[in-house]
Image (cartoon, rainbow, N blue to C red; front, side, top):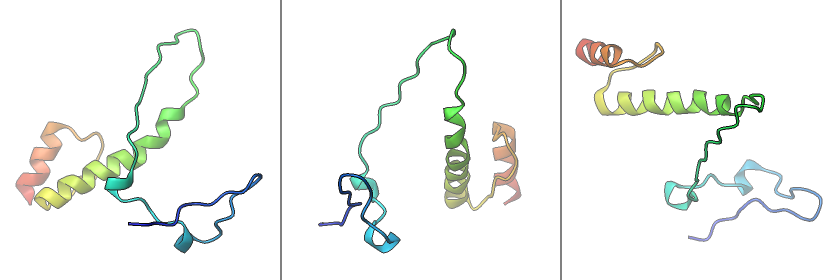
Length: 88
């Protein structure tokens, strides 16, 4: 499938609408390697926190899709998951 991707020229993005910048499908997403660096002498930059919201939402939606039960309270412990499924 030919898809229009975000277009750039030398100084800037030239794609100006969401319709011209389609969302990738799962088959199109490139592999991502995550590397954790042990740098105890460096200060924390807090870059990992940005992924927590979407990750938690994805897990909660996957559980709801599979079981019909909605998880709404963090952390998702085994006990909370079992209770939510039992109540459904």
